[in-house]
Length: 207
Image 1 (spheres, rainbow, N blue to C red):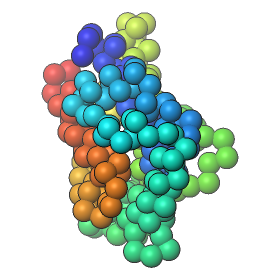
Image 2 (image 1 turned 90 degrees about the vertical axis):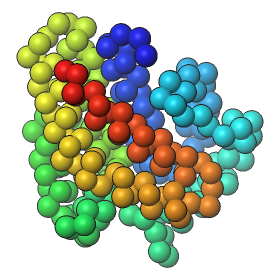
Image 3 (image 1 turned 60 degrees about the vertical axis):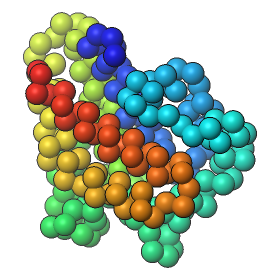
Image 4 (image 1 turned 135 degrees about the horizontal axis):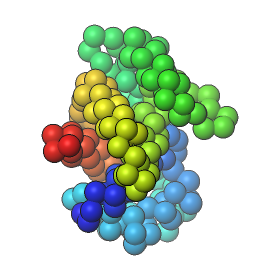
């Protein structure tokens, strides 16, 4: 995995990648990014490989095949899997629940702005992953600058978010996706997501 700074950079990249994948239907440029050797290498370091069909097939054809699957799984209009924390937590089960408000306040408290044109709900899975991408990137910068105070704050908030948010709903969400997915890609991504969060949980025990 390399040193701790390189690891933070790779973790940030994985969070960013997952945010892109879950945010909307795949676009050609995203598929091409996924096929780049550097991304494939990072994924393999976390024990994950894209299936051969995904790698070999043209990006345009892949996008055409996966667009309908994304809509069926995450948007509807039929039975689908809403990618929101509040919906997937047993004690809530509805949009804009207590966890949505908590996530919104935390993002704003840390000054991590939403993307330009953001129209979604703050506890959408892609927003939470983008939040962690930025937080881990701050951690990386703090390590490079030997800024112990900022580093301590980053690690504290990362651990808190994983314990109080990701751990409470990501496994449930991923299990649903694996069960309902008719395509290897989103089922694989769900397995990667769950495995990556489990990996993240182990990091803070050593700090």
